[in-house]
Image (cartoon, rainbow, N blue to C red):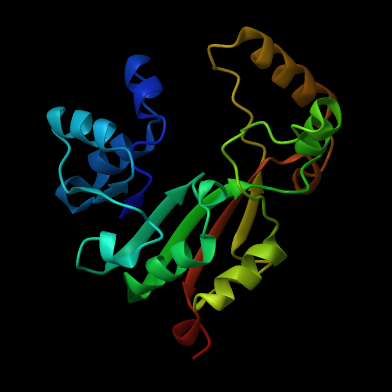
Length: 207
């Protein structure tokens, strides 16, 4: 299940970006891939382009999901947009098979990149105005635990730089290249922008 499956659809389809996530998942897993998203217009566009098993609904409402469980749920750059993140994680928990995994990515709260952005742009201290919250591993662990999920703070979290230099904004690309050049020696835990977290059912994981 790919939650937030229309993410970057318009931009990546227009630029023929081979890295579009739902497209790559569909190539690898075919009809086994499901999608859930709030944007009905983009879902309809995807259906017209041949993508199937697409559902319109709110990911934080378990009843909006298809009536089945999944071995893997993927949610890239989504949880920071959701108003009720605990309900979202609970919905994911409800639709995971006992041995299933939830893989999510989200901005890393204490990245030097974001701290610099916050200082320069205060009080608009997040680069995406649609974000409702920001996380670090400990915060996310507490929230996940309340939804019956768990992950190892040291082994199930990866922080990556994830600084794209192929955006349409040449000024942004230039700044990213400059920052990468000046900070190549820094640990990823300091300058990395994105967390990749793998979560499991807490009951099964602790057996």
